[in-house]
Each structure stands twice: as structure tokens, then as C-alpha cells.
Length: 214
View (cartoon, rainbow, N blue to C red):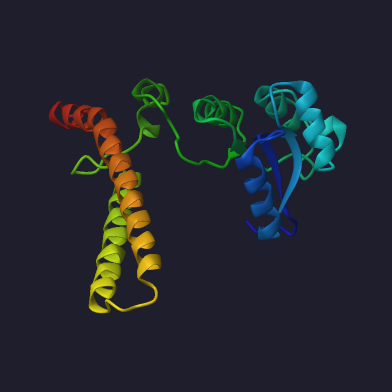
């Protein structure tokens, strides 16, 4: 379906002093096809209203929490209410918001992490559980592995340049780049290992269902 208008976004989180909220707002402005029309910026109503004034939202479209924004926005007419919700809160709130949005029949934009606990995945039902591949990797883990490989390739390239031209004026810059890239590779590597370990329960459960014919 083609819309002849901008998508109307509702934001949850991203109140005063929050970094990621402003990143999301800037990204929506850069996109040119998204309009912020409602929000629950903070669990503190005063801070939420303050942020609403700063971004020029009508006071009646600034809410106190995610439940309120979902409940009241869906009562508005189509074309006036929000089309989707953008999460800009700490990780532990991602699952409650996603569940509330889906159960209310509203669209939601998802970002990592979708879940923090295996129990949360099982609550979403079999059809909505994260899917483990044959090797036990989730899709995000595969992307992390690829990121590590790309970073290591860049490090190797930088090392070749570094040692092939001992008199280069850019040796110090290359050295800093190599160190930073190695640090990034280590960070991504730790994230990959954590992702693989956290996916093992899903792999074990899927193997059990397959063996039992479920």
C-alpha cells in the first residue's frame, strides 16, 4: 500500500539528556518521510512535557508512559494517530514495549536487543521465538562474525602498509588505527561469543522439538 503522506511516529523514551532519542529524531528528519507526532519521553511527566515543548509537540500528544501513548493514540482517527512506535529507552524496556505494541495491534520499530531473557522469548509463543540456524547462530551473531572478519582484514591491510613503508609520515596514524581496529574486533568478538552462548537454549529446544516430531 502506498501512502501519500509522511509516516507518523510515536516515540517512547528519549527524554531530556538522553542520547539515542535525539539520534532517532534526527534520523527521522533526515529521512524526510517520517514525522514525530506523539511521544512518552520520560516516566517523569514533568520531564516528558519539557521534552515535548522542546520539540514543539502539542501538549495533548505528550504522554506519561508507553501504555498511555498506545491506548490514547489508537483511539484517534486513522491518519491522525501514530503509524508506528519507535523505542528509545533502556534495553530492559524493549520487550515490554514490543509486547504492548503488538498486543494492541500497532506497528513498532525494533532495534537490538529484542529480548534479554530466554523466558521472554518463550512468552511470545512458538511462532515468534528467535530462530537459531543449524550452527546455533542467530542472525545478529552471523553479522557480528562478519564484522570481526572485516575488521581483521582491515588490520592486516594496515599492517602490510605499516611495515612496507618504514619511512612513511603516517606511521603513527596507522598505528592508532590498527590499535583501535583490534579493540573493535575484540569487542565484537566478545559480543559474538555472548550471542552464541545465549542462542544455545533455542538450539537445544528446537532440536528437542525436531526429535519429538513437534
